[in-house]
Length: 122
Image (cartoon, rainbow, N blue to C red):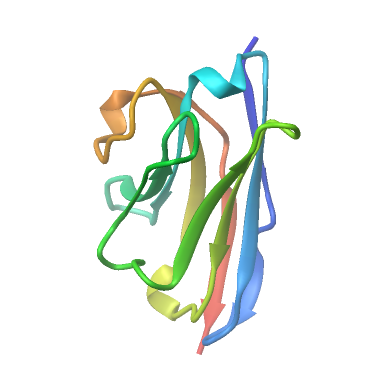
């Protein structure tokens, strides 16, 4: 049974930083690309960042490029999202995903976590 467990969300002031983590179990971690998405009420799920199976390739949404960094640790079966210079526009429920390839479309991802809330105050 595949499980993706996000952690690290919380309340932070604008300009601050948070580090999200996603621990994967029930799958062969090195065989999957990993990604982060976010969603706010009434809006579609939005791509944030993704990293390839081996970690050599990454992809970022334009809105987070230069502020967010995705990484993965194969020893810990964990993917991270370091978020810096946060703004209220980054407030959302952040989801971890596992899939076959790096892709921005949510439908390309096979497995999803339950999400962790990030709230950025002014």
